[in-house]
Amino acid sequence: MASGTTHPVRPWVDDMSAPERAALLGAYVLPGGPTDPNPIIGQARAGEDLGLSHLFIGERYATKDLGALAGALTQVTSRCRIVGGVTHIGTRHPMVLASLGQTLQALSGGRFILGFGRGSAGRWRSYGLPTPTSAMLADMADILRRLWAGERVSYDGPAGCFPDLVVQERPAVAPPPLFLAAVGPGTLAVAGRAYDGVMLHPFLTPDAVGRAAAIVRDAADVAGRDAQAIAVHATVIVAPDRDPAEVLGARALGYLLVVGLGEALVASNGWDPAALAAIRSHHRFAGLDYNAIKAIPASDLAAVARDLPSEWLATAAATGSVGECVRALDGYLDAGATNILLHGSTPDQLGDFVRAFANA
Image (tube, rainbow, N blue to C red):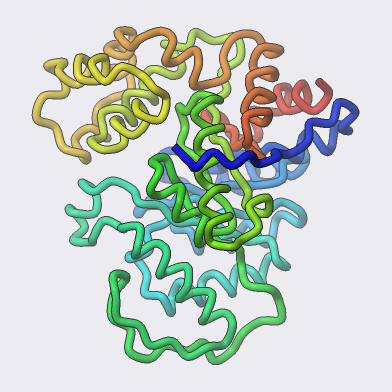
């Protein structure tokens, strides 16, 4: 838990206009593992038409290359922030990351945000890459900012060995902000010390989001940074008028079965770890590694997910009627989030819900 410093959060204004409320929301575009990237164009346009403020791209090393997709979105949107949410600090050399970030920032007119995350240790082992540590994540943010400032960088440390780096040409736009995906207290503290914003993991309760935001802001205070300037995006799955077990269960299990991530979510929410152990002991999951878990059909996951404690799905997502889902999102904002990242549907599917939230 953070040190207990009291931080004012975004003031809740009862007479906030509908466009202002819509701008509290963002959404993923091209979610999951598609084989055709083209739908991202229509989804992004729909998000901009709805008044969303952020469009998030979750990179996959298949048909979801961050640079290609974000570059396309710079040309079909004019207002939304385009967020790389997220990539690994080691799949691209720092010079390539610096080039990617400032090129997309120039193409978008200053609307790009570069996001990093720890990801799964199992995945990175299979790729032959190290799992990012707190020191690596903090140092990479510093390296990129120094390169974008025109400095010559010589670095030998946790993030790698880079004898002599310099970006010779720089566009006439400010460098892109850096976001960090986080769930555990260590990564949250890194976000507060070294990043401009944090993307919180799905399946956190409002109370857990409040605790996470406090850790981020306390760490920023200790580092001498403006704690209120750090964006806190709570990622919330929204499933109005749907059975939570049917809609959310498979997705929840996909997270909870991953070693490390499942424990972090249970700890953050104050849930019973024995319930997680019971789910993991199911014969369908015995001996599976990260890649095998990700290959389990959603129907198989959904069948087992009905054994999850019902309060887990009810309290860590927005479920029930449309009005109840709207109130759930307001609860996350009241808890300390500055923004909501809608999860589970693309912008072209969210029109009615976004309008309901905007006009609440």
